[in-house]
Length: 230
Image (cartoon, rainbow, N blue to C red; front, side):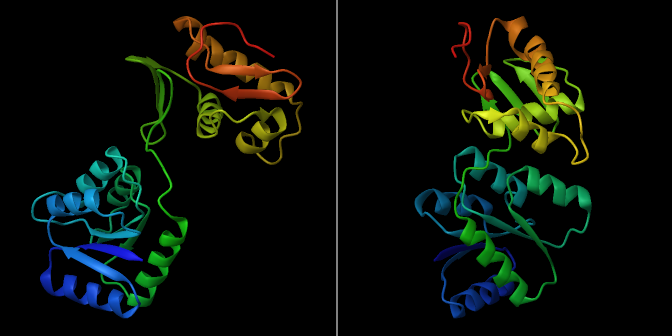
């Protein structure tokens, strides 16, 4: 397993890299955000340990650029920042986990092992289906450049379907994912909400992303302009 350590404090960089090597990892290290981006473009790392306070690029910027470039290597952020807002922003920019300084090495190793097991799975910050785009962090939906206002339940339903794009989802699956466990209504509530979504995200634009699969449920596909096909 090969790990990239990005930490500008020279001594801490050396300590982290040394301890990881003792754990059996192959380790590359740098104190520069720009250099980290160049290294990650050349080498398929299994994990990245990333400090937020770097002398050139902020760690959040490094993480965001990695994801924009299609690098999905798991990122463990090291930070002395305790503010919730900073942690939330980091996760929204594509970080996978946080460890606050000062930390204990057994916890660093455990968190890194968990991330490495997960692997480099694509986890885009924003979801898209054709010209339809949904940003979970900003809680926004747009068709091209046109913003679309949704209720919280409509947004949750659309987000779940976009995260499971192209999968055929039954009404029962959608209720289980979006409605509270105590919901006792009928499955036709899904038909009602899908109809509302179509009135907002599809019909005004002459598009069709929400498709009916008769006798089963619905699926989210790419932009389509012809009628549903059973």
